[in-house]
Image (cartoon, rainbow, N blue to C red; front, side):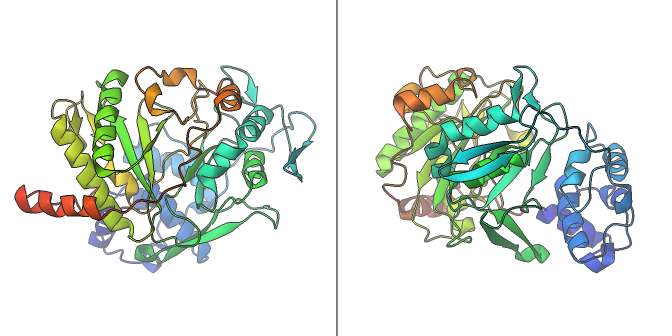
Length: 412
């Protein structure tokens, strides 16, 4: 939940969870500035303390009404399903007999293995699980010991999507979790924290398609060990422009003596990941990321932007989204499938591939063979952890010389 949503609720006189216990989802959603994510967070918290929204028992109906009246777009019961309530509807028929997958010596049960997840290709739940086994060392490198949010599709891509922060119920005792605290909202969540490939395949059993890890490890959930450079093209920016911005980003990294590891986003952008020493909290990592993004955008003023407000961004520019380094912000992991009809993958690539890679070629069907042939381009990502001192010096200089302070992470 954003600070803007918190302020909007306080303006209504609802300063705490106790004030919301007798309210309905529809009432709270009607408050300007309170969006679906805020409702999910609040629903979780209210359900946990035993005082759910007054219309929580209506399940999807309440969510659909709230979405319609608040103008959130196409209503979806999925978000409500993952937030302190249960979806309606009958029990699904099984799709094939359960199978057992041997995952590095541990047997993982996969029910309804023939349930179709990607209708455009006919790819099934079993295909998804076997994909993750095929790229096992790569996906585990990306997720190991990281709190991980799950994007689940219980009915495949034709059904609703569930954003799952808390570990799904029914998890075996061997599946590890880590507790994340959200002090501003007096909330916590026990998230999946994979330590083995079997943990990842078990998540597939729970209908997970996408894995979105935090940029921290379980040993210190307040200090990131990964800096993420997110090159996010605006609607009129083609992928060739993303390539050019990535090239300048690499130049700046080289000048800093830092090695970054690129990957496709699985959509229209590119990501570059850098391992860092876990010596700084989220706010300072985000500030360093802003300084880097500002330098890249300065060198490409006609192609890149760090404008905080979407309305201020040129629709043909690439937004260098430094805010992906803020607390509770996640991106699809390296080797994560995306919940898109094409079955695209957020796939690690080499720097020399950036100039001609076509992200559409990197899918559930093609990436396992690529992995077997060339290995993992991110294999050495953990070799060196870099410092942020230089970037934080840049941040000081930009703020002093340009009178442009880093945007507050409390802005929407």
